[in-house]
Length: 234
Length: 80
Image 1 (cartoon, rainbow over the protein chains, first blue to last red):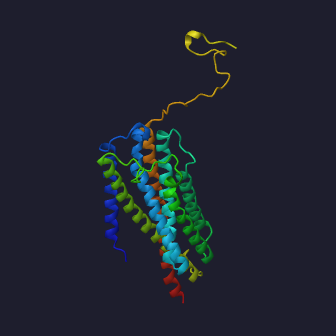
Image 2: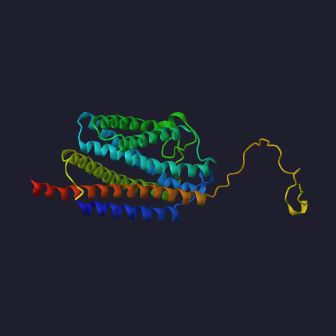
Image 3: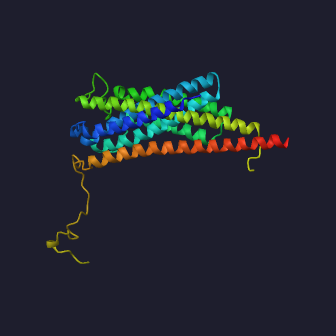
């Protein structure tokens, strides 16, 4: 049994962290140079952690999918499903925030840069996986196909991560020690670390919530299959 | 066709662009950084809140169906 108080406590910590972080980013973190987008560069402190949360959720999807293929169970399937759903949500956050920053920094919302293109492909795979799970049923074949798809989606993530180093492009490589400009102010570093902490909490909470939901749905489906003649209409 | 007076500032038909010429360097980026920043934050939180709303709604639907099944079970055992 999951301790409900602990979950509520983590939600409270996550909410407070995000609130404090937003205040810190808006009030304390200095504006970056105009070439980096100026004030719009502050999108970075949530954009990058959201991308990191996408990696975390993709990793969960990958591990749970691989475990499901090795030894199927409802719990493993639920975590794989939750990983794909949360990766899609965080992918949406990254894809919404990135182009708005790019508009100021690069002058365009979108460019077919290696990082952007590979990330878009990866997110589309997770979205396709979510759509598949929603509309293709929950049979064993569908679950196995989804697990294989989940592994494929996450296998692309290392390509996304190293695409800037491999193929260059417009996307900055700020977090790379050699070659990236780095964050030139302590407050910038603190804001980014705060963003990572907050998004880690959020990713953990969302994954738990969605896995719990997927597991409940699977159990409900099995219960309905076992008792098809049960009249629930009174 | 009437022609606007040059004093009003409105270009006459002859003065309006009748062709398009390429320019080098492009125009200066004029998007408001504040607007883009606020839009990005609002959209990110909207996605998060939408995701949470859907999650809680689906969880509520599952809970409702489970309680329906639980209510139906005693009826079956009574009938038997």
